[in-house]
Amino acid sequence: MLLCGIRDGVLPQGDDPDSADAVERDYSLYDLSFMERIDQLRLPGINRINEGIGRAAAPRLGVFAGRAVAVAPEGVSVAGYAELAGESRNPAVVCVFAMTPLEGTGALIIDAALAEIIVELYFGGETAGGLRGNFVLTPATRPVIERAASTLLDVISEAWKGATGAAFSCVRFERWGLNPGGIGPESMHLSSFRVEAAGGTGRFQIAIPLHAIAAMRHRLVNLCDETERRRWTGRLTGLLMETPLVLTAELGTALISAGDLLGLRPGDIIEIDKKAGEPLPVTAGGQPVFLAAPGAVGGRYAVRITGIGAQGI
Image 1 (spheres, helix red, strand yellow):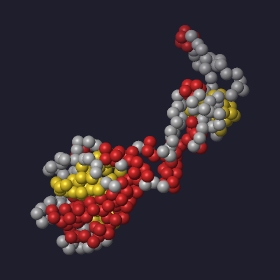
Image 2 (image 1 turned 45 degrees about the horizontal axis):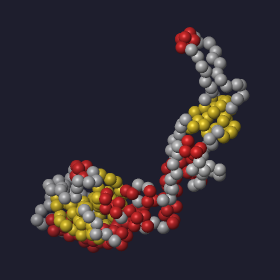
Image 3 (image 1 turned 90 degrees about the vertical axis):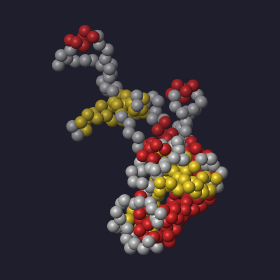
Image 4 (image 1 turned 60 degrees about the horizontal axis):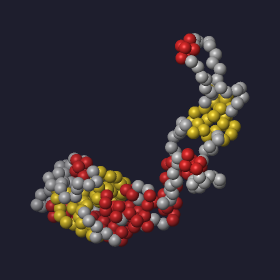
């Protein structure tokens, strides 16, 4: 019955969720289309914002670098502050930003590969294919990276302000790994972006405190139109319908004493509680869902469904 409710969106006729029988079955009802109830860290509205950031960041960085640049969102994740700092194996440049009118600070993290690409192309390099992979922030390169980060932050701020009303502004720049303080200690929501330019590849991340995402949750949900809601519901329903279940067909049971059990030998016959020709119960998760008749197919035992179990599907 519950699987039918997931598939069809409604419970079968005659099943009252407030009835005593429903309480005994111990199930809860969820509206899969009500996205405010779904994991707030993966709201579809964030995906829409990130797609807009990718489209807007590519030409802005292209003008800055003097080359064609491709920017694509790679997805979202969640990381604790300590974990986020530990994952930066290569030194990265960080722009810590405020989120008006929200409390707390976030960070725009530019990895070393992207920083090196930006500097190489800004100073007239023809290709990023020969990068050394040992970017060092110097008095000459720091202003370039800070300008590039400011360009990216402008794009990010425009996207988020248009969608949620929150405006991002840079508080300071710092070198991740040398002074990683100021944006913790809470968990952060991460949006990752892949940047390709002149044969080189780098990445930047947008880290926003989870409490800020929660504060903007309703506006993020409202970014989605009815088509996106149906698509969201369809994907979630599809994942639920792909859940593997173990079906068990029980031939029967027998009651036997411990002494008789110890006396059993090969060739002995045990009489079970099922009569010949009586339907066998087929269970899923311990719940009876079908009635079946025993048989064989292709040299393997099999059962043929003959009816629906007492509690339905």
